[in-house]
Image 1 (cartoon, rainbow, N blue to C red):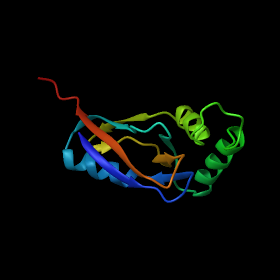
Image 2 (image 1 turned 180 degrees about the vertical axis):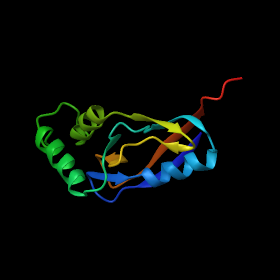
Image 3 (image 1 turned 90 degrees about the vertical axis):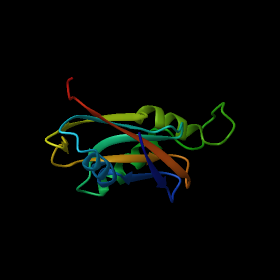
Image 4 (image 1 turned 60 degrees about the horizontal axis):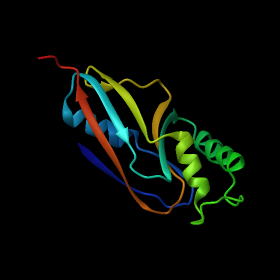
Length: 134
């Protein structure tokens, strides 16, 4: 298992980790299989979306903030309930297929780490699995 270290700089942030994951996949030299990307934090998440236009990241953050405001009448008293909810909506893992030693992503697809309670030092676990049959 590989560990990717992430440093977020804002309370809410989408960090493109596509090239980091790509480097891990290339290092493993797996011909076909998949890569599982997992976030072990309850106020952070992971998603795949368009990476060509940076305004998509802004739109996602703004919409999540509008739908799940920071200062609601939440029961959780740490002040980060909104981040827990946003992370739950985005999810804690994504799986990407590997074919011919490369990730199978759509033309515009990138892998994003979502920070909901930053700035923080975070981890992402990456497991590359081969479809090689014995």
